[in-house]
Length: 199
Image 1: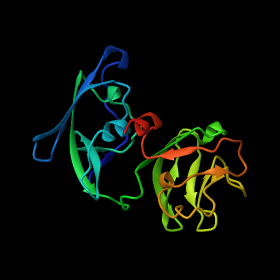
Image 2 (image 1 turned 90 degrees about the horizontal axis):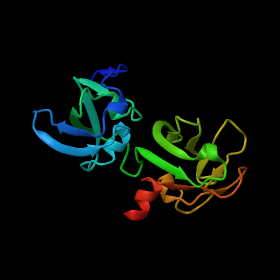
Image 3 (image 1 turned 90 degrees about the vertical axis):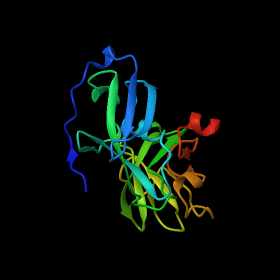
């Protein structure tokens, strides 16, 4: 178990940094990744998206032996210079590989439902996903309703997969349709849409 910290290093003003070179060390001190030319606005979540996780493992980043908990922290706020050194630890994945750490929702007619969702607590045997910027969330409602997206507590969800035969898989593997929110229905993917289209 690692300590956690909500305090982030003040670093230089973000505008003073053109690019940041991020070096990731293993616990033994060996360099395992050199990530050059990272924009200071790059978040820790986007940084970890560039890593190839071993099967069944997820990345944990440490700064001065403190675990970095918030994926939305930008690296420019952590760097004291144009070089940032972190420790990378691969810990056992909490969920099976079919449950991604992040989901990207785009194209929804209801704008509050778009954005980045992060895996959260379990409900009905599946992880929930939460959009910290808008308060929207995705949850599993069972085989009849499938995955549902809400932007606020309600008796009716905004979008759902209904009884799609693939809906028992990750939300990213299931087509969504409109229920009570305006069209179009969103696309849910494991990568940002531009990256997903290019890969």
